[in-house]
Amino acid sequence: MSTILVVDDEKNYLWMLDEVLREEGYDVLTSNSAAKAVLMLKEESINVLLTDLRMTGMDGMALLSQAREVSPTTSAILMTAYGTIERAVEAMREGAYDFIVKPFDNADLLRIIQKANERSTLLRENVRLSQALTGRYHFDAVPGTSPAMQAVYDIITRVTDSKATVLISGESGSGKEVMARTIHFNGPRSGRPFLAVNCGALTETLAESELFGHERGAFTGANTKHAGLFEQANGGTLFLDEIGELPLALQAKLLRVLDSQEIRRVGGEKSIQIDARILAATNRDLQSEVQNGRFREDLLYRLSVIRIEVPPLRDRKEDIPVLAKTYLEQLRQEGSTRGQRLSPKALDYLLHHRWRGNVRELQNAIAYAALMAKEEDIQPEDFPVELTGTSDWVSTLGRLLPPDAPLDATLKAIEGYMINRAMTMGHGVQAKAAEVLQISRSLLQYKIKQQPPVSTED
Image 1 (cartoon, rainbow, N blue to C red):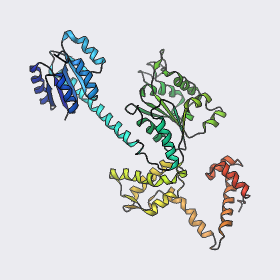
Image 2: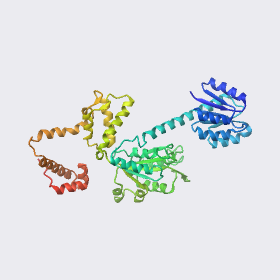
Image 3: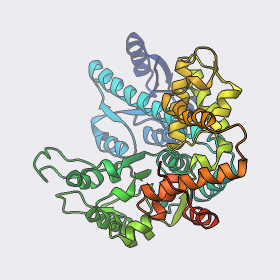
Image 4: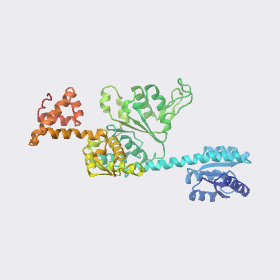
């Protein structure tokens, strides 16, 4: 039920409006004093404020100013006479939703109140969602207790209040967007928009319009004016995911925007001032992209005022239990899963998986297992085949190895075989072989020096 507060120092209007609005199903509060109305706005949940403009003592303009402070989601409508229409228009510039001229038709008033109430409902829902997101991305709510992630959170806490651009790098699925949202929702822009765009999904022909907007008639099909993502994110944050995929021509324009804080729509003749914090992310080595001529060096420096490296999940396995339990708890609260808990065997199984897809793969695996579990305790066999299939080679190896196989010699033989196979797959390039083996190039070089690889031929 929506609540309307009616404020007028004429008692006849208060009585009449109370009757009309109650017949429409609204809860109605009335006050013949703007000062008392301010107290009611503080104490009650008011959807719409309907106030006269000219009143003794505090007038409608002053009440509007106070209402914006104490109840920002309340939509204000001013009642005015013909002689004060200019002041009513001024009030709309100051944040009033609308005004209506006395004497008015009740149907017109009800129509305006209905729209004002819809606006108030939308504002409250936005506040609720913003608060929910702020809680979800609060530092205490984002799981990750490993030293590697604590180092990441330490950087984030230092940059949330800044306007500096941040470049977040890491493998696909490692949680780069979560880090970006954590920065936004813990900073002063948390009540403003957070917009994310995958630069790799932007076609070169439409990317400029998507980012900077366009004027009507700027190109075939531009039938209306369009505000780009920079304008839509004004006052908030624009997250440019996979920035390494952005075409070179647009990289130059992005650099100009970062330097000038101005954009120009496609087909536009004037610059538009914007205030959007830029966070970018990549799973590429942008320094290598610069050397290969695929990324502008000056843009890289401009984006990476602050750099955050999100470590892959395999390098912080101590985070797996808390991440898995957090995802499972979220599913459990939704009440749509059979699996409620991870058995010790299931947890041990997760700890020994490589997680090439990082936290995204873990989250999907938990969701699958929770749905497919035959009982409340999730077991290893409940996980997707692509996970359980990774253990097939273990049973195969067990059948092939003799019971008396010496440990050191066997491990060296297996390691040499894998190194030689990876070098073959990488056409002799150590960097590619290291990627196949999922180890660093320096570690591969060390292992090659320790022992010559064995033959992979049958």
